[in-house]
Image (cartoon, rainbow, N blue to C red):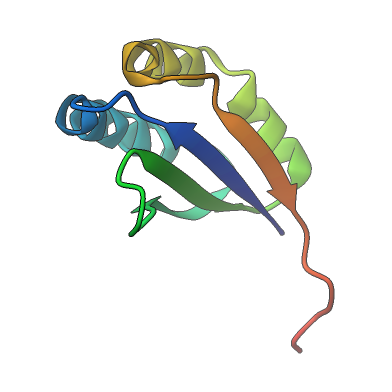
Length: 98
């Protein structure tokens, strides 16, 4: 399993339209093969700084979603609200809990 952290800086004043658009993206992502879970978060001190944290069965599952037409369409819908390109970080567990 891997986790993916996506950071987005939203244009000030466009948080509400961004939130509506990202809801559509989250609805699309739950249908992606290999998607396990995800949440949308906001920096408590900087309201325009948003994060998506998702869990995937494998790096290959994430890469399929990353390059899918569904993600491209969803990203096109939120791009007008972004101050800069999103930053993506792939995270791997350091140890097994079991």
